[in-house]
View: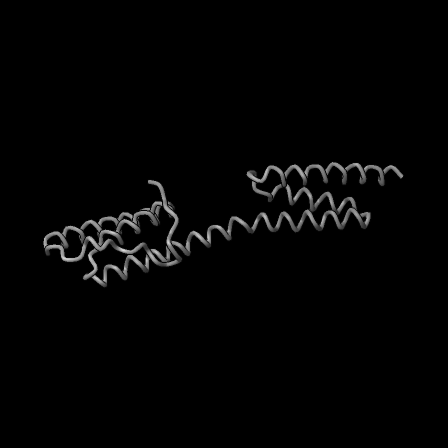
Length: 158
């Protein structure tokens, strides 16, 4: 299921005006469909498939007749909580990158101060904590580590 970008934080897309004036039987079927999508979204959240959950909640919101305000509120609340999960997940993925970047900067400062051994330790830590998908950053860390290693062996030869 392909996720669509949400309209704004915590707010599922508006329901179609086509649902206005429908018969009670049709409204009950639409409510049943919205409820099914809502429950499926909750399962997706539990499985960790947050993007699919958002898409299902959008479908639930679109299917839910306007007269069922409690159901609409439940869908809207879960939609907001699900978006919050996405934002928290993004923040957690950024933490190792920020920490590795700081270690890299500290290693550069250590090299400028002539502390090659300390720089090597920092660069090893930065490389080990930098996510693999950041190949360019990992390459920069490796290059600086090579320089630090040569500076360390040069200072040890003195």
